[in-house]
Image (cartoon, rainbow, N blue to C red; front, top):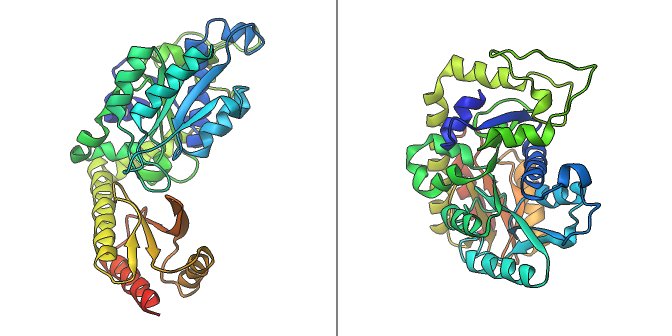
Length: 346
């Protein structure tokens, strides 16, 4: 299962990984691996050392799991730099470069950048190749949070947008999103798989496993000793339905999101708050307050029209539709547009 996921991303055969409870745990394990690899003496001394403060960089649109991982690992929220984004809500590489330079001049130690392949709010994709170039030049670990979007790489036409994922040192995926697996099924892949093991393997006399070419003991690839067989349900679905079924489903959700975006733009009284990059569509009803948008969400749910969520884009409140169900139809999308049009007119 992991070898196939690595091939979808474009990772080499040296890659290894582990199925996790979700993207947040995958990001936590990725940053653990990065610390072990990029901070000399970290495994033995942790942060109890006489050394410059460590700094990690991500965008203002990044998932909260990056902050949570930094807090859990002892990096501290004061040492997480949230880089501004451009007009397309992507990390601004010039601002990232400046932040790294400023931290180095101040005596701090940059060590990791977390880019996003599919932000939660708008579905934007950071400029991955440009960020990878910078990380190579600055000798920083590059982790890509692809929990939402990276498995759209099953669609060949997404490679121009997301191909930079293959240059990451590590990447988060969520099979319980775009492979429609039941919870829990997250994933961490590390380009150089030995670095994942170096960060998590420990020896003990009471837990010995003989070397076996047919078995990987995943207690050496993550924090858990006891763990369930998350890969089986994902593998079984791929065997039962075939990869093309998932590729078709994902392409369909992308097409439906574009249909919704076009419908919003064509409807008086509605505004599209951000470009539709993946399957997230951010909408504002013109003139509606934050409270009125919240009431609108409750109304749509109560009448069984749609289950949408709140969003804040560039300081403007709105609602967010995210097409994540392979059974969603064109009629469902048109219903949402028509209903929102009626509400805007009201």
